[in-house]
Length: 65
Image 1 (cartoon, helix red, strand yellow):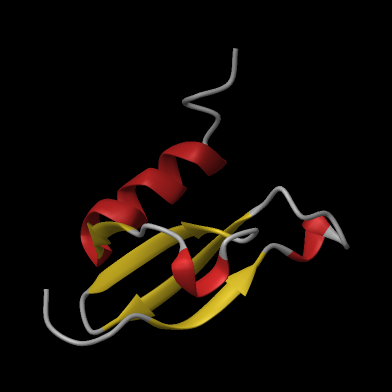
Image 2 (cartoon, helix red, strand yellow):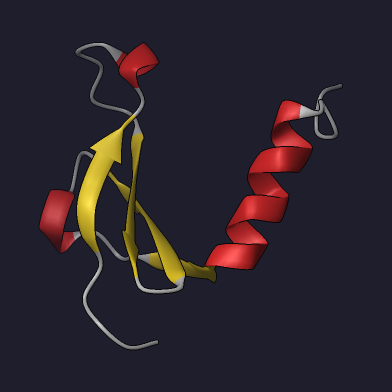
């Protein structure tokens, strides 16, 4: 991965809750971190393609029980 992940954002549905994840991006990659820890949080990194597949599957209900 090249570049630093920036533009961290949290779901608008999380309101003022602290127990959320944030998603950020850099060229071709997406990072996910714990919002409670902010910049000290470990970051899970995915390719943009993998993240796109994951979010599409989530919207389609693939992970619903």
